[in-house]
Figure (tube, rainbow, N blue to C red):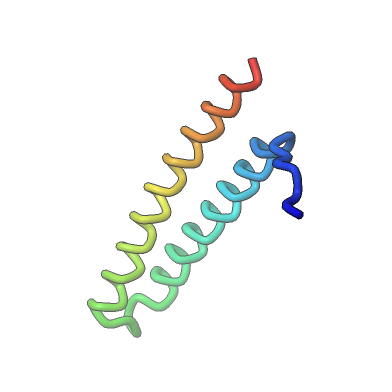
Length: 73
């Protein structure tokens, strides 16, 4: 039997996900700065592309929080 759909903590879970994503983004930037001389251009590009995808995810998650707030009105 399926569990009931509990969305009571969706906003909190989304906020936690945003926080972790921001932390990962910052750590990637710090890593890139600390190891800039050792990284190839391809590796630097991969880090930058991943951070761009993280930024897009954050924007989507922020929209989800707004949607949750509207649904809870």
